[in-house]
Image 1 (cartoon, rainbow, N blue to C red):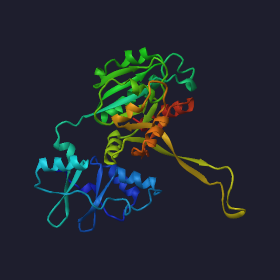
Image 2 (image 1 turned 135 degrees about the vertical axis):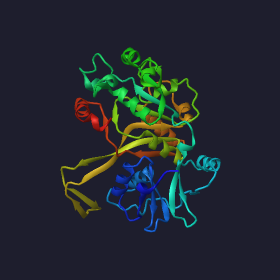
Image 3 (image 1 turned 90 degrees about the horizontal axis):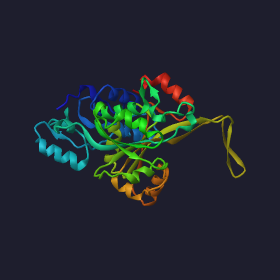
Image 4 (image 1 turned 180 degrees about the vertical axis):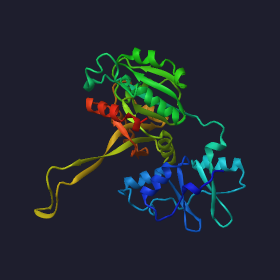
Length: 347
């Protein structure tokens, strides 16, 4: 059982305070308590991200987003009972209370299971030619460009490994021998690496139709040209907690208008906004898919947005995972220079 003094928070705290407290703890959950220590609810990364999707910001209160009906345990509860509850409800932390409902600790389900490594597969799309980065990519695949003395692809693999994911498939095409010779079977990095060889360009999803590995659990798909500082376990937890078939990582993007915007109702002017900032979400190139999604993908060029449209059309549950962490999509020379300048923030 873990101590909780550093993860307790009052219900009138701001999201900014919650994020600061979360960042200082490895427990990935906060216990919302009143001034007497009585447990009122829980707050995790997923709750905060859902709040952002609803329009809240870091100065908003956590009152409307913390979970008020958490599963709880008593100090002497049986380990098998706790595991059964956790598996049935797909939860990973269980607050512990005393007879007066005062929070006294927290059980971390991972600690009740011997292995901390995750068996979920990670598929990295590393077959692109990187034409917008020429001449840098004339003789080398884009994911092999170095950032911080390591290829972009190696930084990505090591970030997943830090989060417990060790099983990789690299989808390769352009100058694939360079990638295969460098990484081999992954032994030197402490992971397992296999390869999909794209004979033709297959887009950001098409090569998934060539997977030979039998999949029994959700798996990651990620573009091989990203620099990102994300705890991938949080995204997997979010996907599973929401019983999603497909999850797309999204990032908020803003554009400042150069003009004042006049809002009309028929011919009447109802308001004027001076150079407003337009906000919308963009695809961050990171996905989690249920194995059943692979049966939808044809063996040809097929991109991920098309796959998501198809999944949505089938009425499956499809969700977004809002990304607030550091992220760079290295598509152009300016992006690469930014990664070179700030790589320590992403590694």
